[in-house]
Structure formats: structure tokens, C-alpha cells
Length: 301
Length: 308
Image (cartoon, rainbow over all chains, first blue to last red; front, side, top):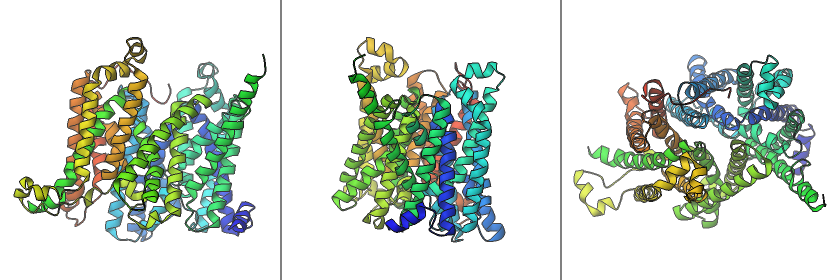
């Protein structure tokens, strides 16, 4: 098992596994980077609502494709459906907050539970349809790379690459908005548009990560790496890079462990790897970690 | 009628009780901007439930509930710690802790024997409302027959107790809750112990979530913490009417949702049923949507959308 893990980690466990681990690393890097911006804008949990809101779209796409072609599990189609309801969820949160006096936490909780509830209802419809597609959708709840098909691995790796390019292109603008929104506005940046593109990229990354990390846990990839990076630096730019690095390592190691044995769900393993890095950062992080902090206190000023 | 008593009476009552208890607590969570607490709690209890199962060796409610409560308390401590040490926003601190604990719970499930017994993640997420049948409810007289009543699903009396505890807490600590929800600083100065009431409210939310979760699944719990109180807040400015509205919305969601899930597909000629818990969440969302469109107090003093 250790051998299989090392093979996967060093990209020597066959073409398919290599694609999956590489895709997971890319995905982790993307999620860490976009997650940093989103958390700095105090919207970490919006990511959670968005990931849960993908479920009805996934299932609707599955049903439609099953009815039309007899085969529901076609990843690009499922991703389109997931993006549609995730985006709808984001729009509903925005609408609730703008048109009523409810706060963003209420909108987030409402969208999360109601959209997920609708997805659950639709999943029982699929069960009743008896297309045998349950197996195809179950992997999206907790993430499974074991049964991933070649085309799916390629789709994930390529779209993660594209999302990474988009994030890199907008990173400077996002950094300004996160660092000082008022100043950013005076330089001519449209804050609302920047915020919306941030959320749009978050939706994209979440949907790309669905099959790897599962929709219940994919949000962790956008929250834990930035939180860990916070212990190493106080500067936004560096925080993005560190979070992306931590996300990549978590994705790579988690997917490799998962590839090494049966019954090892990918999502939880990636999350627990990220959590381990977080704990190390909390203790040793150079900017706010416990050990450096105590060391500083002990030295006389 | 006997069909109704056997199949639907207990689930509808359980759903109503769980929804009422969650909505009652939810009123204060919504006012305190802690709406996501229900989401966090329902994730963190998973490792506790699995640990309770592994230690006890059987699917019995008490060790699992004890484990869940312990996990909820542990998570509250961890969230506070992460938030203070990391200088993180509360949402991020919560996110770090609840995803990690949920991941640990899933892994424990997958790697242990728990998976083979009816404990699984989907069950935890979606609940199993439809399974709460009352075999002795063969006719109306069963409602007055102590022997038949004793045969009701055990979730029912448990939730009655939870609802009573929640209600008693809200009545007894009404002043402290209200002051603490609207003005924590003032609450401190008048000695209303906001930190203590905060902790008690958190614990109460956890207990409600754990018991309701066992009966109806976590998604329904999260929806009931948020949607009825949020819709009620768009109906009135005053707290007592708001709580009354939220109770009404919770009851309508639970019963209409159950009926639509169980019988709705049959009405359109499909011989099947869909998830009642999911449907209840959807109905509560529709009610919130209607309140946001037409509620008399939907506009208040606030405020901006994705750009704050």
C-alpha cells in the first residue's frame, strides 16, 4: 500500500492515476488561490452554499441526458448543470441580501439547505426512474477518483488549468480589492464586478472539484489552505501563493493516498491532508504561529 | 385512514416537532448572524456519532447522541481557538473545523464496520423520515390506547422533550436572549451575561440539531434553523410575532412538504414518492421566497449585496 501511494505521488502509477493526481493538485492550487480572495472578502461560507447548490443541477442534467441518450453520466453535461444551479444559488443569495433586510449568513444558509433539499428530492426521482444511475451520482457526494474514467480525468485536468489561468489573470485586481476596497475603487476598479467575477471563478473551481472532492467537502479546499497560509504571512499576494501551494500539496497527497487502497474516499483524504498542514501552520507559522509567537514574547523587548 | 395512521402520522408529527424546535432556536441565530451554525453543527456531529457507535458496538441512540454532543462541544472550542489564533473571519474558522471533522467522520465510517450497519453518510444527510412507521396505528382508537401509543417511534417522545427544553430555555432566559441578540455590549453592562447565554444557545442549537438530525436528517435541520425564522423576520418588526410566524411557517413546511413528497408524485400519476425531508426543505425555501417578494417588512434598514 505504501508502494502504491509513493507510485501515485511520484506520477508512476499509470497514466490514468497520474492524470487524476495531477488534476487534483491543480484543482487544489486553484481552490487555494480563489479561496484566499473569497475568505478575505469574508465570504468563506458562500462557497459552501455554492457547492451544495450544484446538486439539483447535477441531477437535472443527469435525468435529461439519461432520457435523451440513455446514459446520464457524461461529465461535461453534468458540469454544465452543476454550474447552472450553483450560479442560480449565488444569484439568489445576492438577491435576498439586496432586496430584503436579511444578512448574507441567512441567504447563505437558506440557499445551501433549500437547493440541496431540491437536489435530494430529484435524486429520489432518479431512483424511481431505475436507470441504474445512482452509482453514477453517488460519487459526487463525497468524491471518488477510483472509478474515474479517462475522459473525465482529462476534462478535470484541462478545466483546472483554464481556471488557473483565469485566476492568475485577475489576481492583481482581486488582491487590490481584498487589500483595500476603497482605494481599489479610486483606481477605477468596479468592486461589484470584481466580487462577481470572484464568485464566478469560485463556482467554476467548485464544479471542477466536485468529482474529486465531493460536493460536501470541496468547500474545504477553498477555506483551509487560505486559513493555513494566514499563519505564514500578512500580505495578500504571498498569502495567495502559499494557499495555492498548500492546496496543491493537499490535492496531490490526498489523491495519492486514495489511489493506494480500496474504500478510501478522495474528498475526506484531501481535506484531512489540508487539515494536517493547517495544524502545522498554526503551531509553526512564521507570521502568527504559536511557537514563533511565544518565542517573541519570551525575548525582552 | 388507518394507512395514514400507520405510515404518515408519526413522520408528520416528528417532522413538525423537529421543525418547531429548530425554528425556535433559529430565530435567535438569525438575529445574531449565526445562521450557518446549524450547517456547521450538523457536519461536526458525524465523527461523534460514528465514535459513539464504535465504542458502544451497536446502533443505539444514547452513545451516539453523547458522541454527537461531545463533538459539537469540541468543535465550538476549536472554532473559537482557530478564530482567535488565526485572526480569521468567523465563517472561515467555522469552515476549517467543520469540514475537517466531517472528513474525519466519513473516513472513520468507511474504514470501520459501521458502514455495514444502517449507518451511512447519505442516511445522515437525508434522514429517514419515511421509515418512522407506527405499526399499531391501525385505527383511530389506537390514539387513546396506551399500549399502541407505546409502540410509536422513540424519536417522537425524544423530540417532545427537546421541544419542551428549548421552549423553557427561551421563556426563562427571554430577557438575556433578546438583549444579547440585539446589543451584546449593552447586555454586558446590565449583567445579562451575554457570553454565557451565547454558549447556552449554542449548546441548545447543538442538542436540537443532534436529536432532530437523528430523526429527519441534517438538511432538514439546517433549513429549519434558517428559512422559517428568516421568512418571519420579513413579516414583522417585533420579536414575539416573529417567533409566532416562524412556528407557523415551520409547521406548514413540515406538513405540506411531507404530503407533497409522499403523495405529490401520485397526484401527477407516478406511482412513487420522493424524499420528504428534501421536499420539506424546498417548501420552506418557497415560503422564504414568497416572504422576500411580498412580506410587509421585507425592507428594513439594510443593505448591499455581493459588494459590501
